[in-house]
Image (cartoon, rainbow, N blue to C red; front, side):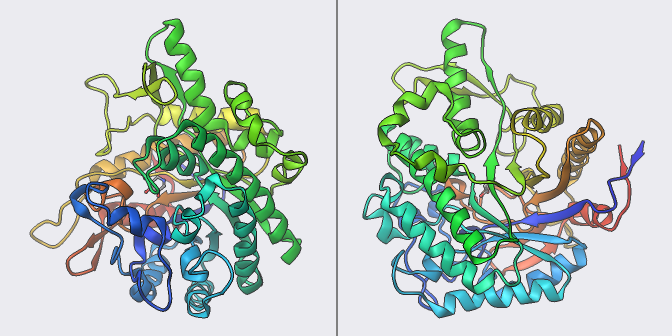
Length: 443
Ligand code: IFM
């Protein structure tokens, strides 16, 4: 079966600053929480750090050529707050802004629409020293940073996202502690959720002040939850996990309230007027999707739940994440039902597999091609079911620094040899290129 996407469907690719840029000590960049965390022994697999990553800070022109040849019409990247405000507030680093300025111009020159995300997890360490997202003031410093970036780039960048996966910032950074800054506290998760929501609202207001016609959104992260069994405690655990991981940002930002299982615990941090700030009108509804999870009650854990591995025999990626395109289609359908009819964009979806270069210097990644075929099939089906999905951004353009997994997990459609920084487009790159050029999807 060959299926076509709407002619104006947006084909894109996503990356994030700390995962690809490297050059962490260049041109006045300040320290981020991920520099600090990755340099702490035992925090990242193999002791990997983002010091060099894909060296995109120096190789961005080559990377824009790869994108142009890929035929994508949009590229989502993030700006690094510590590159722009090395101390997190106050002084602005002109060289940092100039880097993104050049990148945006090169993208436009290549006919690629820049989609800018203001925060993909690299908080300036100086702000973490003041409590990070546990500190309400950080929301106001984030607003100032947003205004600085907007003043410089809003004349050329139309699409802005305030945060990428704020749920991961709060839960993994302040709960599990396996992401920077590595805090493990239930109260800190709740505080961080609220500060991040407030920052989102303040950021949207700052952007609108700069230009009323910008297209604004946040990038949520939806992985449906299922109870591991039908026991009462697993069902409760599942609802709590769903509230924290799937609803703690989209609900307050779009519906104006926190989901019931966590509302009472967040209430002490909510001040009068906060909800009016948080619930801003958005122009698009964006999320990332990777996998659904099974949840069970786990005594002694921070929130009394844990995620269990898929049953033996379930197809999984190199992350151990279940491959299930039907679950993805259902997320799109459910999101429309819950949050309304805003234009929907999938701003990250993709898969890690253990890719290798063959004797002819090529990278065959049939599993990723099959994954993309199936997941794009789900997008096609969701559109046919009336969901206004307007674009899809593959994660990721390049193999990159996969957080606590370092360089051990490859998500790119372009292979990166981290020793030489050579880029090799994988088979999936050519598969995606054909779709971006208008070829129908064969299923
Ligand atoms: O690499 C990450 C990205 O930074 C955020 N979304 C999930 C990806 C894969 O884990």
